[in-house]
Image (cartoon, rainbow, N blue to C red):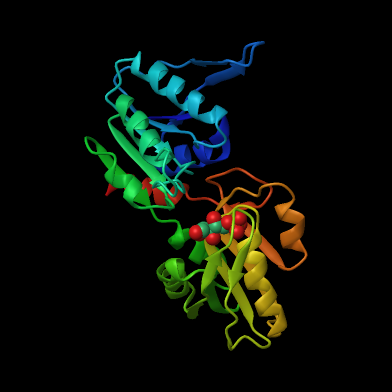
Length: 284
Ligand code: R5P
């Protein structure tokens, strides 16, 4: 069994190879002078079960993903499972205005053309999985690994900044063995959100805000401000996908005591690996 790691998912590929007890393939990726992408796999993948790992964000990594799928298909592999840890464009899962594309559906259609199976992690819109009509597609849950990270830190509340993610906060809380609650969020535009004030029993307590994505940081910052006002003792911000656009990290550090993400997107705050959970789900 081999794991082929794309350049966007080097850390996770290594961890997944360990979890699956697979070999990590030697892969060369570079850019031509005109910025086109070149890939080459320097291992014999004939008759092998292959896992390709590559996050589809930012855009240049999407082309690399397709080239790697094609390079793998040039071997006579037993099977190819494409793992896209962070599914870029999943937030455009419908037309919000006439004339827009359904970007997530378009990517799902392209990704399944050249693979036998597909896996992603905490995809923003679960409907994305349904668009993989002809092949096995799985949405891996990160909450068991997030829960393990938070357990033992003395956290007394897991807070979802958004009612839509309340179930996930509850699952994390069950692993940590503490309470869960949620806030009600309204998105005003790409960068601004409004969170309805809510009385929370957090005075002197350690609280973790758990979300699927941190992008601008606006959502977590608004939630953390509420916790600060209500005298929480320590605020953890944890998410699956750390996009961290612009200066999100310093802004978050100003209001949160600890920031941690999984390794679906490699960033300075990646401290939880979803590899064990991907390996478990692959065997299911
Ligand atoms: C939204 O529905 C997601 O669950 C996240 O809350 C959102 O993507 C976070 O974005 P930002 O960090 O820009 O507020």
